[in-house]
Image 1 (cartoon, rainbow, N blue to C red):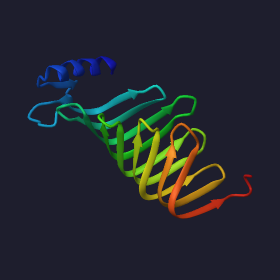
Image 2: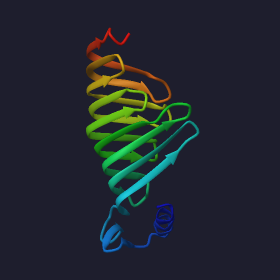
Image 3: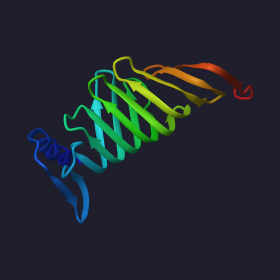
Image 4: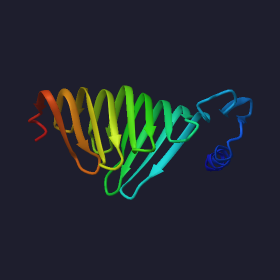
Length: 176
C-alpha cells in the first residue's frame, strides 16, 4: 500500500490524470473530475509530535489543491503518545489539512482498548488542541458508568470528557 500511495503522490504533484487498477477493479482515478484524486478501499495516515492517526475508508476523495479530503465509510484510529488507541467508525469524514480538523458524521461509534465507548451522530477532532467534541446527542460508557446528554468535549491525550447539557449519569456500584 505504501508504494501505491507514493506512486499516487507523484501523480498528484504533477497534476496528471490517472487511473489505477488492481486486477480489473478500479482503485483510483482523476479522470473527468474537478475534485482531484479518488481512491477506493484505501488508507490515509497523518502524524504530529503527540498524536498519530490512520483512516481506512471505502472511498477517499482529495480536493484538487489536496487541502481537503473526504472519506466514506471509514475507520479512524487515533493513537496519542503514551495512551492506548481510540477507534472511531462512521459514514462520512472530512479532513481539512489547513486547520487540522477532522469532521465526522453519520453513526459515529468510538471505542478505546481500555473499555470506553462513544456513540453520537457527529463529532470533530482538532489536531492542534487534541480535542474531540460534538454538539449532538452523545452516549459515553465506561467500565462503571454510562453518561448521556447533548454535546461533549474531551481531550485525546487524557481520559477526560465533559457532557455539555441535559446530562444523565448512571454509575454501577457493583463495579466500584
